[in-house]
Length: 426
Image (cartoon, rainbow, N blue to C red; front, side, top):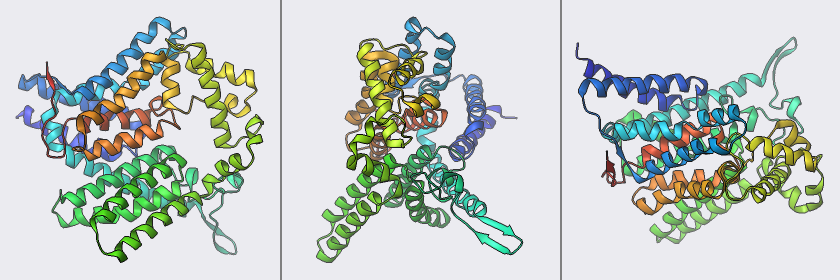
């Protein structure tokens, strides 16, 4: 038996399974990644080809993780520190795995992204189906359909089983939302470039567009909705420049306005409107409103930064430092939930100080300087991540850091012409 060929095929299938499973089987991902790494290792050992090629972007990801390792020297809670390293391991694992197998990933990149799109389609349809099932009741007097969950009826999204938590059955709605938005952009890019010629693939990609737009709106993550509006406006602007027909230009302008108005009228934006109309609510620490709670959390985080500006408190003590601030200001909900900073920039600064914050910013902007306009997928990915970092500590959760670590390293190895970016052979 040709074991090299066996592991080569296994690597290909595992990469497709991994991309497909990202939004469906989050808890199984660590086991799947471990098997995948082992398969790659066996192929490399048997073929006696071990060469590491690290791109500058991958080097930045590894460097950020090593800064977290150095955080051991000023972290007091060793157990929490080790857990933080475990959660962020994707920042190290994926650059190395892709760096050791760059040719494989360049060859299979498009198919990996296609299986990611298909996985998002399946998870979206499954989520809609489960919401329909949860809204259907078989009672003595017949069949009833109720979309409102009484337990969450007073929440900003009205307790609908087709919005936010009621719709996202596999992972947190904010994370699912930016997964869907990234899949949406991939579908558009594949259709524009005519990457795939098979009829069934083209039908699937075309069908994914309206499905993903619907899911983004229904999932109602405020940050992702705003990200989507920026992306839609950019696409509309490009279309507006392309066409000279005034009627078409008029339709494009109407579409842009419809997107903006529709987004602002999403029920999830009520909390922001209320805070702007009644700024005195920001002083009420008993309110459980998500937007107001975030303002309180950010205020606490910034004060921790002021107290530990240069070196932070250490990755193991960030949550403890935030909780102390919540107690001091009597922030009830953040204290009850033991909330993280809900902002990756603030979180990283508290973790590692000024150097950590600068490193995170470089992780986002160095690839943009290298890619320029050649790598549209990487640019859009970094925009989605960079913007959502403002509202969530994405690198503190498995669903966030696995998604970021993998696609950040994958998209950094090739440009739009499928040419290898400059890398350092080791």
